Length: 235
Length: 399
Image (cartoon, rainbow over all chains, first blue to last red; front, side, top):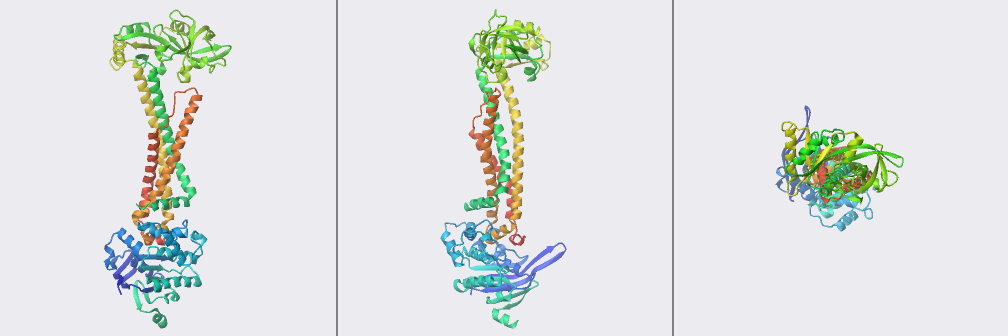
């Protein structure tokens, strides 16, 4: 399998006054095409930072990040924005929809920034239908339930048909039943559309869906299990 | 260019309607006042020009004092005597000259009492020399004694309750005068309520020996400005004054109007300056809203960056927003500015000053719009740059 993301000896250090916080403390890690990876860890362990660095949303203090073999740490802000726009789809715990835009407009947003816009409303309708929001296209986020909002966010992440989906605690704000439905959507994207998926969670039930689980503590990877089942079984 | 960002910016403004409109109002006030003052200024300038075209370019005025104060001071001071007039008459290039009296007098007509300016007219000068024609009756003539020509408004019953017709008698400073003519409309209330009487009688009723000012006419084919400096030179010598220390002013009508026009220009600049300050305040209002907006939308900015917005896209969105505020404020402000200008024209016409005509100058409007848009962009630039430089991860974490 082709390697899509590689982290080489990555450090992320925050300096707050006199204290130094090592969010990532020498991480080596790689993601292959078609992976479904869960990154687990307690809060403050550095798992979100790791996702942000994999998703080129943040830059390491030290070390290198390669994206599809290209040294991303050398790219300009706008080149990186282009990669995020076309190759990566983000899903957040807080959904992060634009409140005054309809579901339709929210989903369309990545197209707005890609510069290759032609009228693709049909595409947006299809995407919203695929996440089960048919008929709710013109609703605003506050007219949708949490689960529905997260579905909009997933549709938005898929707008430019990226290879990779990155989700930071996507079920963290949802009840377990809704959370399960969201995970089913992600699972489906992985199985049937061969999307590479990285998900950050502290919930073992969620991590169970993944094929590979990374445990992270104090900014270091402490365990890298190839299958989630083994991990859970050992636990 | 990603034009859809413009629509997005518009949606963002619509999402905070009240605040957007309040900010726009700030711009409206600024642009409206700039446009109003510009229109009034150019309206006044062109009315002065119109005046100038009416009155002969060959008229030269000699009045006491220095510069503009002289014209106003002419009503009270009497620094000229017949010898000065005689001197001026002898100056090369002078066709004719005459001393005049310009004073406020008590005027009565059919038991109504008013106060107005009375002009003592010398034999040498006729009313039509001012560019004012005689509408009814005749000019004052050499042998006239207690005769008078009344201004347009007096004749048309806009001064006394009843119209003062040719043949009527009016009383000036207690003496009865027969009305022999009426002047055509000049356009300002003060000028149109004047009464012209012979100079000899004016001297008598005001108990004056001298003149308020002297009016001369240069010979045809000569440059009136050269004749004016000739007069100035002779008068200076005669009075034994050093150059630059003259206690009088000699100006051609053109120079007088230029002086007026210059002063008007300065006044106009002051007003436009004040208006511009209000526009700056409007700009600060835009900056304030945009900064607030950047802070409020920090997470949205983070999200947009996460889904692939480039720094320039974020910058464009915010600059578009402030630009739209500026432009909308500019359009409404320009319309209101024109309306306010027209209102001033209307009000001054009611007040008797009909010379002011506000013409809708497209250059002023376009200038106003461009100005508003530029103010919008400039005010929005700093907040937009701040927004575009936000770190996406920190922005996403912002509560």
